[in-house]
Length: 368
Image (spheres, rainbow, N blue to C red):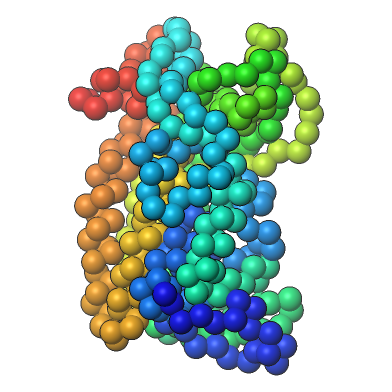
């Protein structure tokens, strides 16, 4: 169990004081909370700085996780909304069915439960604060207008696609898809996830992921493709409403950037990157919950070992593990996505044929 700080450090915050810790984690998504929990459980003093006041909100995620992932120790099963067994892929020349066994999770609850488990392990969680990172591992946290200086032996950047930590070390995402999503009502419950490919969604696709009587409806398109995600989302909603799948309604949308360039260098000196900050998001599907959690957990273990022993060379273990676990599949997926993007400029037939070679639902994907 980690050596617990007070989660809010009221005296230090009020006085604009200085804090010392072994590991500073920037970001409290799945990667950050997993890192914080594993580092604290290994005996490290951990501070987590999360810029959002409410962890996990608003959700910018369709919420699918593969079934084996949910059996991992520490995964919040209470966040599961419904199981799914199949993926239905819609494309210009037809519809294909494939197995896609997993669950839809309530992302807000999922993130909050992970953060709670990190705090229970001894990590200090600071929400509603921004972190300015310095090269020596120190940081200035803006906590309700009061500057708090923090010095850490190791800094883990789990702060999303536009990672400030990644910018600091010169390893950051440069290629993105733009996503937009609505929570919509279903006409009738669905047991499967649906994905929609069309040349009007270059470098991306649409999705309908059921959650009991509602669903996450979203689209993603390549940044710079000249397509407005919200306009594309409205069109998809209209199409699915006309087909009797959803009840179309206007409402607030969520969305953001999806890193699609593949994995980045995830270590520089005493800095580590995890999750979207490390490019550990699948460039084709946009999926990143499982890789974020797994990578974050390993980052926390390596950070704790390095910080408590004073041997920064131990951080190389994380770098090597990420290369072995994620780098090959994610780089291959980035190349497949780039090919699909170019084929979207051709005919419906050429695009659909390319989809068979380059989309995960088809057996040709594994052999191409």
